[in-house]
Length: 120
Image (cartoon, one colour):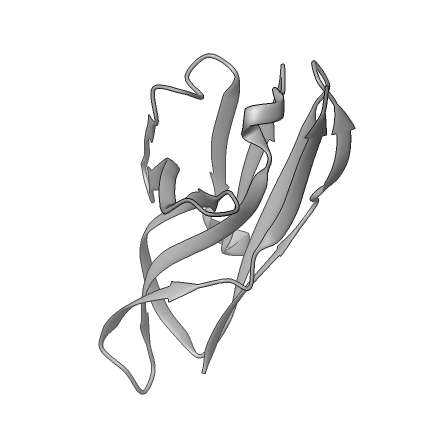
């Protein structure tokens, strides 16, 4: 079994900052791309940012210049530093990773999500 666990969500005022973390654990052989998606109420789940094992981050246009994704391969962990938060950033943020486990082939795994609420 492979799991992703997010943390760091919460309530913040517009203009504030939050840092999300996501740790992959379990019978992991290798991890390729990791990233963050978000889903606001009544909307589809959208890509926020992704990062490869060697770096090379990509971002949605809506968060460029405000969010920074980073990765610690030794800890199987990614982070999302969110600055200058806006009310429209309010959503459940999901961590995702392409993982090959001891007993499985490559699989896209999802975390349970963490709520981020930005008040105006």
